[in-house]
Length: 199
Image (tube, rainbow, N blue to C red; front, top):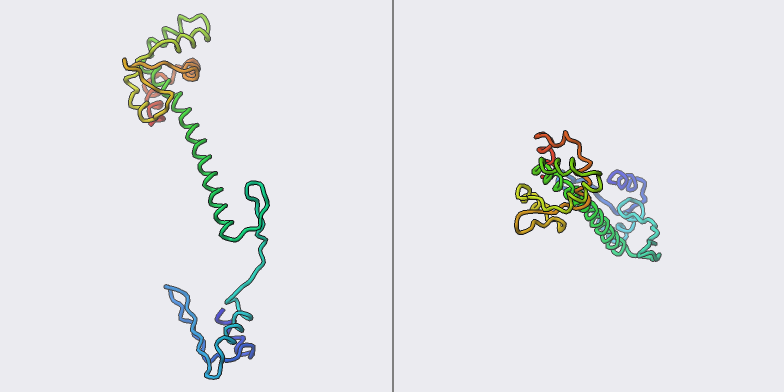
């Protein structure tokens, strides 16, 4: 921009500038323009605006949709509506991700209860005539849940409420996950994996 102003002064397109200095440094941008005695400051300023990039105008179509209706808006209105839209998107995404995490934690609590009561779980599954009966039996019993109480408190899901006697009933999703569980997940390593995923 400084070179452009200097070229315009040489070409005599801008009259009245006596000296031009670039005093910019790492703290900011600064250009000093000293005028001749006979120069009119407003005229020189208008010439600078007209011939240099000191002031730039450009057209913008400020038509946008607001709640499904097209409206012509100011820049402030556009920014306000865009920020509100982004808040809505982030809130919805966070709720969705929280719901998915809670669903997964719900299953993991059921698996942790299964690991804590592994012998009884295997006995119930082995003595059941079919998977549906095994699922119903798993859901109808109160399972000791003192070992997973800290996990349940951490998750703070309304679906997990430990009874006064320290037991918990399994939900349909938890019972289904237990029946789909591979036996290798019941090893000490598998138990640590379940605990780590819950944390």
